Image 1 (cartoon, rainbow, N blue to C red):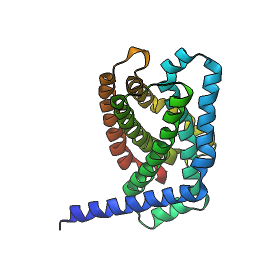
Image 2 (cartoon, rainbow, N blue to C red):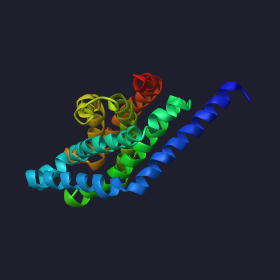
Image 3 (cartoon, rainbow, N blue to C red):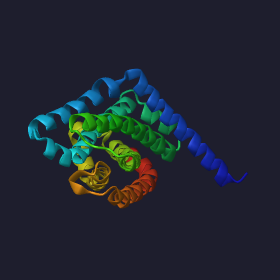
Amino acid sequence: MSATSTSMKRLVSVARIVMLKDLRAEINSRVLVNQVAPFSVVIMILFAFALDNDGILQRVAPGLVWLATMFSMLVVVQRSFAVETADGALDSLRVAGVDTRALFLGKSLALGVQLCALDIILVATAFFLYNVQLEPSGLLVVFVTVVLACFGLGFIGTLYGGLAAGARGRETLLPLLLLPVVAPVLIGATRATEAGFMSGGAEVSEGWPWSGLLLVFAVIFGVVGSVAFGPLIDE
C-alpha cells in the first residue's frame, strides 16, 4: 500500500471521527432541535405576517427558506467553535498533531448535516405555511439543491468560523465576514429552489444549472478550506 493511500485513509478516518464528535455533541445538547430550528421557523412565520399575501409568499418562498438558513447557520457556526475554544479542545487537537485538513473536513461535514436537517424543516414549513406546490421532479431538484448548498455552506462556515474563533467580538465579526461570501450560494440555491417550487412560472429544468453552480462552489471552498484552515487557526 502506497504512502499516499495510507495518508488518505488516515485523513478520512480522522475526519469521520471529528464529524461524529460534533454530531454527538449536537445530539447531546439538542441546540439545533430546541433553539435553532424554532428560531428558523419563527423567522418563516414572521415573513408570513410581514408579507401577508399568498401569491407573494409563494413567489418569494425559496428566498425566505435560504435567508432563514443563512441566519440560522451563524448560530450553529458560532456555537460549534465556541465549544471548541472554551475548553481548549481546538488547541489540544492541534498540539496532538491532528491533520488540520481532517479537522476542517470533519467539522464541515457535521455542519452540512445539521444544515440539511434544518432545511428539511424549513422546506416543510414553506410547504404548509406558504402553500408551495411540489411535484416529484421538483422535489428532486430541491433535494439536490439542499444537499449541495448545505455542504457548501458547511465548508464556508467552518473556514470563516475558524478565522473568527479567536478574535475579539467574534459574535459580530463572523456575520460581517461570512454573509458577503455566501451571497453566491444564496443566489444559486434560491434560483434552484424556485425552479423546484415552480415559483413565478419557473420550469423545473431551470434548476439544474444552478445546482451545478452550487456543486462547483462547494468543491472550490472545500479545496480552498482544506489548504487554508490550518494557517488561519494558527494565527
